Length: 356
Image (cartoon, rainbow, N blue to C red; front, side):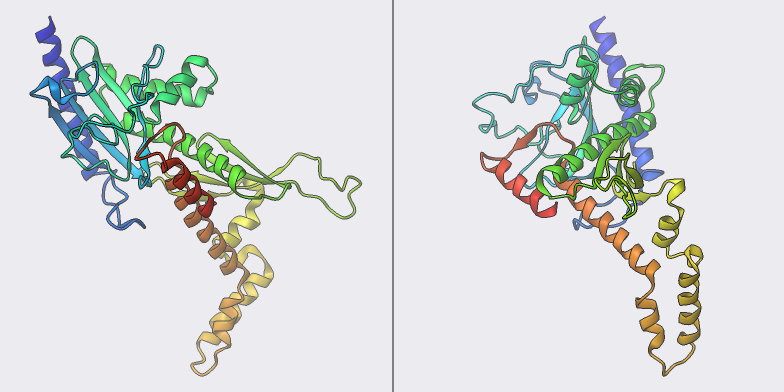
């Protein structure tokens, strides 16, 4: 039975590895150079690796094989986000919570993604790791996964997170539902919610936001709301319900923040798109700019373009997106980190504070 089970696990992990490689060449590939230099927006795949020597594994449950899919950029200068198992039962004990957490074996990876030390595809990335463990099955691990398992056991996580967690586990562990596409999409949804929570927590902790601005995490997006008051209002304190102005949503493929606007904020959306139909003034500015451009010796056209309200709003949202991307990479996905040394926590908080 053990031989047959090991053979079945090997076949399943080979199928998942082939599917991941197809995704890298298809819908999840073709990225462009990111802001971090050599990092790209497409996923990276660590193909199935079979352990020949049991001593190569540093954990109690020695895996037969391991593979991983790496996605999204992450700042790991002071240590990478901890990769934890996603289980349907109680979460596993964390073997890193001891006095020897900073004394690692030379052959053990610092990013604890169970891959060989020679595989460096997971650097500056979040990881979805799949291990084939004899007599156990396929064990799924995710960056920040240990905290997800704890929240699931405590039943404090919402249905949105629970549904995607179940989808991720069933897409990999059920032999009749092997789908790396569904698993990767569910993993990015889980990480999106965790990254949004990390960014909101950092902004509340590090920056001094005005009292009339409210930030809330809603299903992988950050809702930015404001308490609007008017001089003629009887209640000048603004205790009414905040109005959502826009949301910063995370793109599943790239992990970048993109502003989205609710239906009532149509004018703000048109201004962010530099749409001339936002107002009559905007249309007049655009018409004047077109007329001025045709005059080769007249420089007023450039001044008109610079004074465009739509352009100013659009540039502001683009700057906000870039700042949120930088902060998101530094915040990670909540949970524990594989700190490089005792100063890593302080240095990471300082870096987050500068970005916030």
